[in-house]
Every structure is written in structure tokens, then in C-alpha cells.
Image 1 (cartoon, one colour):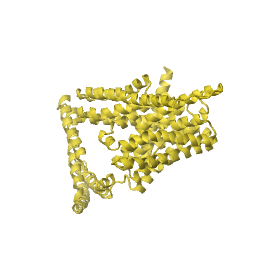
Image 2: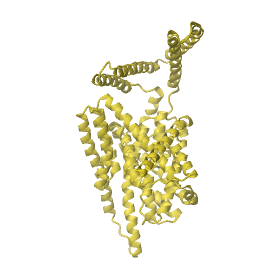
Image 3: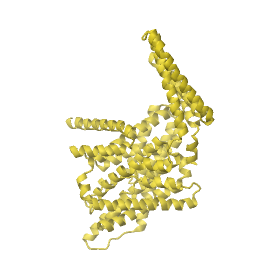
Length: 534
């Protein structure tokens, strides 16, 4: 019982730290995942915390919600339009990274090629969570977000498959070397195993995703539907691993199928609940993973192995440049949808490493040669990509003109915000005066000043709309959303007052949610945003 309470206390403490860090970075304007790693390092620097960060914990508990949430939002249409560069980056890209990094590490560090290739495979898995969260904050082009997320989702699965094959090869070589015999290696068998593991995971994910999507289409209860997606996310991973195929690719396929087929049978209310649930679950899982990374890293080991880490970083950056600039140049020759140079720069510098690479490094068998060194190099690369690349991504995107909200729309938001704030102040003072909380003298003193602020803000907004009629869609959407939100609030008040039953409340709220969803679906993009996406 005491052990259970100690574990529960530790979890609550970690969640509290996550909440405080997330609040702090809202002002600092840095990716919160980067801040979590730094906080974890500072905590362990002051007082080491013994946390058993096993690969099973990361892969089976944390990875499914992260992968499923990202795959759930990928659209068939976007994948179909960008499948050539996505496949090129996720499959040949992983193989190029594995061999380039392995070759450089073996040459520079002096370890065996088999061990170096294992490191190349585990470090090939990208984890752009910090970058994607920045995309959302800056309003990055949707196609760029699709490329980054899709590459990460599929290359994670590919990297894990390659990693397992190379670990088996390295162990067999170690055993055979002790017997002074030539190491046998069947390329055909390795290729067949790769296809079997990858295809098997995808098939299981597609099958389970389709079954759950059909059940969801026949159920109209957001609690049950949310529970089914939770079972699918974790269950598809477990089933695939039971059959010794890729659990990560199974979760990817299940998320994509459910997000594209299952959503068609959901009510608007269920969609809102489901999106919010998975966004929260992914936030918690992602936050804990990166905090635990910081808590698990040994800075002394990194400091004493700075030269091997330097060669590892050289291999990672060089291979990333070859993969992004080389393969996208080839795909542009055959694909209708070209990958612009600005996108390539973001793909190159946004190839962060994180939870997957860490989990694979922790899962290295004790019998593998240079196991401790490979783990230390992994920690060093992960820290560099998070602290150096993650913190400079916003600067790069601004220099490239990507993800920057149109200044005209920002100016409208400023003026509209001032108008709403001034009107709210006037309404509140008048409400308090009429409730006899203020005297007539106070009302007469402040009313003219507040009314003047409202008039000036309204005039400024109307002037901007008159000069730029294209902004009128912003005003229309604001008005419609405010009205629908007021309806939702009124229904909640009626429910709590007992004026309407739960059944009627759900029916009416569904109608309002459907209207809100329609507004979001029909929202017109800003001028600059349209230009960037094109």
C-alpha cells in the first residue's frame, strides 16, 4: 500500500510540475517540451530521482496516445496528395540515415559497424512534437504540418523495424565472432522480415480501425465512442506486438482509419468531446515523456563522452540533409505536389529526436557491444535537437515567412478585442449602477469616458473593414460564434436550473455544436495564409 501511495504521489508531483512549466512557457515563448527537459535536468542536478524509465513503459503506455492522436487528425486527402514525399522520407530516408550515421559513428568513434548501425537505426526515428506544437501556435501551412507529422508517424514504425533487425544481426555477429567464424547474413531474409513486420502492423491497424469505425457509426453516445477509441489506440499496439509485428505502425493505421471513416458516423458533439479528450491525453503523455527524459539523463556521462556525441551529431545532421534535400529533389521530379525549398529547410531543422529514440536506446540488450556508449550518444543527440533546434525553429520559420499570421488579420483582432473589452467594461459598470452598487455620481463620472472608448474602438474597427472589405468574413464569423456560444451557455444554465432534461439538453447542444462546426468548416483563410499554402 505504501508503495502504491508513493507512486501516486510521484505522478501527482510530476503532473504539477508539467502544469507549472506549461504556464511559465506561455510567457517565455519556447516549446514547452524543451522546457520540461530542462526542468528535469535541473531537478536531477539538485537531487537525483530514481525513476525506472523502462522501454516497455514508454512504448506501451506513452507512445500509443501520442501516435494515435496525431494519426487521428491526418486526412486521406492530404496523405494521398503527399504520399510520394512521405513514403520517400519514411522508408528510404530511414535506411539512408541508418547507414550514413552508422558509417560516420563507426569511423569517428571506433566502434564496430554492427553496433554503429544499431545506433543509426534508433536515432533515425524523428519526434517533432515540439515543432508541431509550434506550428499550431504560429498557424503554419497545413501541408507543411502534414509532411512533418506524416513522416514522423511512418518513420517511427520503419525505424523500429530496422532497429530490431539490426540488433539481432549485431548479437549474432558477436556470438559468431567469439567462435572466430564468418558472420552469415541473408539479405533476402532481412528484407522479407522487414516487409512482414511493417505490413503486418499496418494490416492489423487497418482491420481493427475499420471494425471500431463500424461500431462507432452505429452508436450515438460520446462516452462509449471515446472509450472505444481508447481501447483501439492501446489495443492495436498490444495485438500487433503479440503477433511480433510493428505495434507503432498498427496504431498509426488504426488512427488514420478511425479518423477518416469513424468521424463520418459521429455527431458534432462527439467529435468535440473526442478531439478534446485526445488532445488532453496526448498533452499529458507527451509532457511526462519529456520530463522523464530530463530526469533520466546523466549529465556527467554526456560530458565525458562529448567527442563520440559530436560524431553522432555530425552523422545525424549530415544524413538529415541528404534525406531531406536529396530525396525531396527526386520526388519533385515525379510528384505533382512539389516540396518548396522553404518547406525543406523546416523539414531539415525540424527533424528532432525524442521519445522513440530514447525508448529504443533503453531497450538495448546487455550483450550488445558498446551498449552504454550508444545510450549516452542517444541522450546527447536528443538534448541537442531539443535544446538547439527546438528553440530556434520559431526564428527559422519567421525568416522563411512561414506560419506568420497575416498582419491585416492581426490588426483586426486588436481592434475587435479593444471594442469587446471597452463594451464589457461599460456593460459591467452600468449593471452595477442599476443594481445600486454604484451611486448616480459615479455612473455620471465614468459612463461618458467608457462610452467614448467604445465609440472610438467601434469607429476604428469600421474604418479597417471599410478599407479592407475582405476582412468582413472575420466579423461575420465572430458574430456567429458569439451568438452560438451564448446559446450553449444559456442551455447549460437551463439544464442546471432544471428547466430542461438531460435528453433535451443533449439534443439542443448537438444542434448548436453542429452549427459551430459548420462555421469552422466554411471559414475562409486569410490572404497571406492562402498565398503560403499555394
